[in-house]
Length: 149
Image (cartoon, rainbow, N blue to C red; front, top):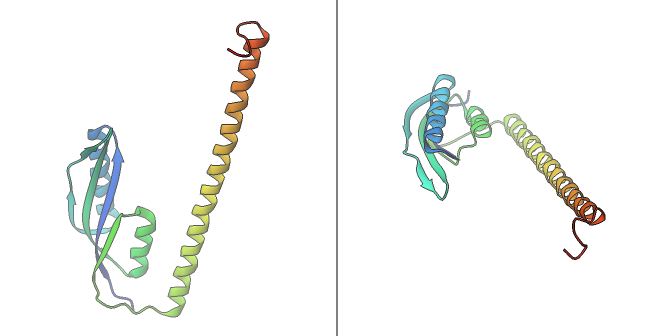
């Protein structure tokens, strides 16, 4: 049987206005507290960075096992994870293989999303440029401007 895992995690958020960022973080931490075992929590004050606000929470959490911690990492994407206990892990080969395959599937999914969005952005840029060119040609054809203008 796998051991429970105690970990400290830091979750960060960016946004504006300050009140929204603070409330969103507080709500997120409260939601985590109802779905996970949160032993300690500290929500820092939001700090302004340029035109947006940055806020973080430090949480001490207990997970049922290593797989539970890894699932949390995929879901919440904390910026930092520090395992406090146990000091040593032992994981069966089938569990390790399942984790590695799950990790690879999630990485491939993220890669596919990135590639799709890059393609969409490229198409959008191309179409925007064409619309602008056609608009300029329309203005020239209607005598509202010359080609050099």
